[in-house]
Length: 444
Image 1: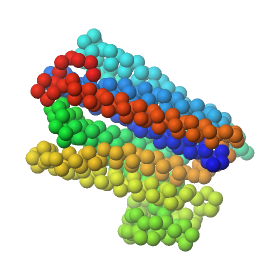
Image 2: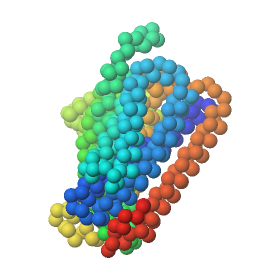
Image 3: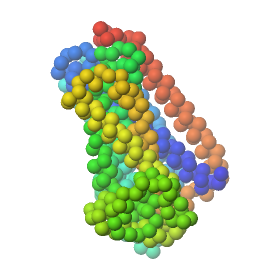
Image 4: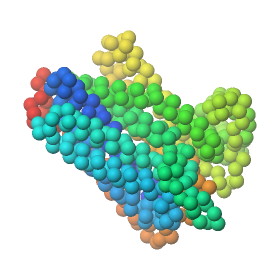
């Protein structure tokens, strides 16, 4: 393994793990505050117990997100110094604001965790809302920085120099809204289905059904509503990519030839040598409609771009198909759940519906990772699109391979520890509470 590949893999693994921790940390506070709101309004002890249980999960993911995010900040400087040398002054603002949001989140979380029976009840609840909003803001700000890499603005690039820098324009670049929207909704989908799946499993096992039923419903509603909104945000994102990064869209769809009435490709195996896709389902004109709003609109193929500027087709296409396929599967589960809520109330107690949510537990995160792969691999060979190539930004430093192995081991260990902590938290809930007498004010 050469140093360039090792540096890219280390960054990929670090981001791949961090994105899961960060998304859960962004979304779980909203679940927690909804349960807390129900407790304040109804005084039903079960909602207080759900709130306290989830608050411990929020604390766990806040810590792991902070650790993994700190590692990423060091990696940007150590692995990609040439990139940071030029890009840092331009897109540094969202990172600095993200630090401020993180600071606010940390203070609010401290108030929330230690404010039980000490603060005014509604003020205490409001600190939880601040945790959620500041965490969501942190995620959006980081995505804004990544969006800048896909749509670099806020400067003039003249003779290799970055002049007339405008950090505000760089932060609110052309890609930030669509990426931030798509990523935020994806965080709610993945976390909602994962949390609902865990509680569905506990219900199927017959453990503390009253407790887990309330928790399941809150998480399931968040996840299913977000799943139905995700195709809308995906359409917005796809239309934006078609304008700004047509080569990425071509790689996503394995679309080799520029044409009108371009078909939407579902599945298939890209044959880059012969510039075709085998075994695919093709829907005539749909790609043109989705990209341009016109069935007869022209969609550029990969052949329209220099060979050394074309993204890796196979990885981008497969990741895109996984993301879309799993997303639509979760939409189907969401529709079934809404039918159960509105028309078929008996379904809510059926084991088959709960088993569907258990099956869907990891799907959101798999789709999340696939979508992130599309974003990053689909931009290659650029680290700053059209300005700097990834190969020109890496550190020519021997020993990166060993760093990659070390950091991979650290992240795997961190994931195992987090999984064990969460398992312990769930089993403690089972040991301390039963469905008939849930609240004993015992520490969770």
